[in-house]
Length: 209
Image 1: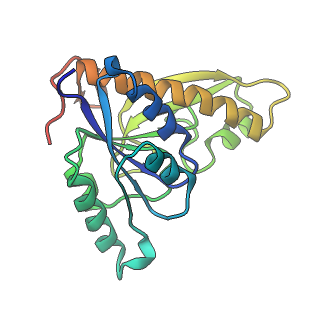
Image 2: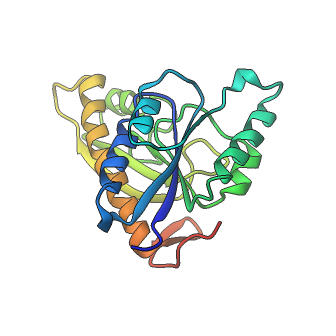
């Protein structure tokens, strides 16, 4: 495709979701390109993955700024410099602020290891297991001002096994999460998407910078 969907991916850790996207982008039919990878810390595997793939990277540490708002504004400007169609949080462990959300409203996606709106927050897999649910999963959603409250793009269901621990359950969720993320970004590249209230609908024109 002559104009692939442009992604900026934000990371904080090992970058398994990033790698899944990079692998998918290697196929021309996927019609998507990771144009930059941003992080809130250095020395992480995710940045190594990006550098090995010859993807531009940038690092902005909150502690290097006098105020959180200044960090948010810098993150917004650095991300916008790559003119992304979408921004994807792939294990990015910082909450963005007003400047970033305003700039990328409706175009900033994140994943969560549970079936939202159930079990939001930092420990989705643990909370689902402790509650005793029989199925949980992963959610891809559009980031808004709340914590895991945005409109849902896609969900993948993962059964909870009787002998699951938090670790075993979370590992299976992550496998489903990667597949869901890759499939959904590919569909957005082919079809576009838009928000209709709280519903995400495919088939619209691509987002515009």
